[in-house]
Length: 112
Image (cartoon, rainbow, N blue to C red; front, side, top):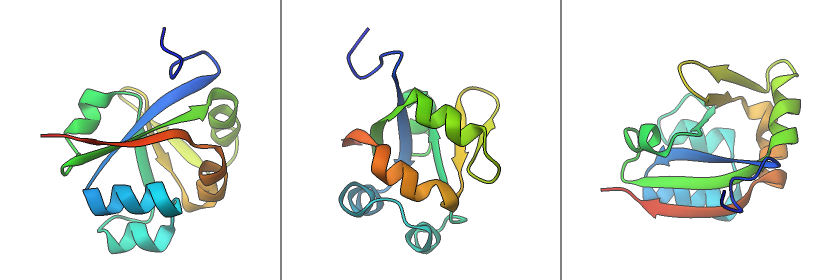
């Protein structure tokens, strides 16, 4: 098991474009930026890199989130929804400040 995927952390992937990935990496999540980029203001992420690549245009933002933080967010209303099938997450803007504080090992991967 890699250090990035320990029981204490979950590795998440977000498919996006290079400009948006760089903005998130440098400035964190922002509802207005998500809307400007063509989204609904939410932030989608998955534990499945291959599934993420379907949405990568042409970049994938990867990061670790403590499992305890994810579980805490899931237990609260209007923070995040666990979406089936798979481990896909729809993070609401109310969770962005927590995500920005807790995301670690962030990197951008080019997807072709």
